[in-house]
Length: 328
Image (cartoon, rainbow, N blue to C red; front, side, top):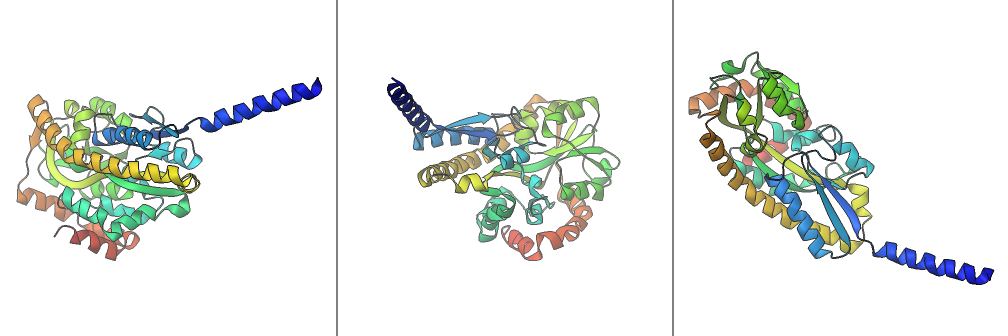
């Protein structure tokens, strides 16, 4: 009787192990922006493609708008294995490698196409693997767009117009230096807190892309948006390097393929969304879009120029030169 009970138990345990082995791997993708943004749509496309390429092997769960982790916690979460994929803005990586600070240098890239050329260059692609010693594996760059500047004031044309104003920034030493160079007071703040901070006057202004300004309704609580195109706001999709290397080869290949396709999809949306959302903001009539002359832009460039020299040693002069070539 005892032998029979033992056999029954072993058989049940075997079935349980088989059932467990057949369960799909749960993969969590967390991000901090709305679903109706290029990044939000890219994450959903990755889910669709990954589950299609690896049927029954993976289930991808997407958590937008800081539902799972906010700006301050998502990097720690991926390193601890609490989430498998995140797509932080490139500004978030300066604590792991100073080289990626290149993307925050003001007026480095003339347009999104130049950003694309640099990211696809050998120097740009090498940055994806520049943090593996810290446990971070980069899988691709996702575009958002060029950054614009906004304030709660009626005029925003020259650097003098922002002197003394409080600007929300991401946690980036370069961006802090950028706003100090123009006489403003940078305030590091999580993305999810920006709308309320603008609404209540905790900060006077911010910098962001057209799609973020529209999807987060920043245009409703700002008077003027200057079309500066002074910087780039892109993301790097990352995962835990140890987890990635430990995946079965077929699963890793399927996820890599899905990520490559999702990257092309998301980046294709970025330009479309920028044009569309700029138009929607203009049509809403709540914030004035201030177009700047060449002389206006030259004034911003001149006052921000020292920021390049300040961070050149950490980034590397050769890397900056490689990025500048992408403008030609």
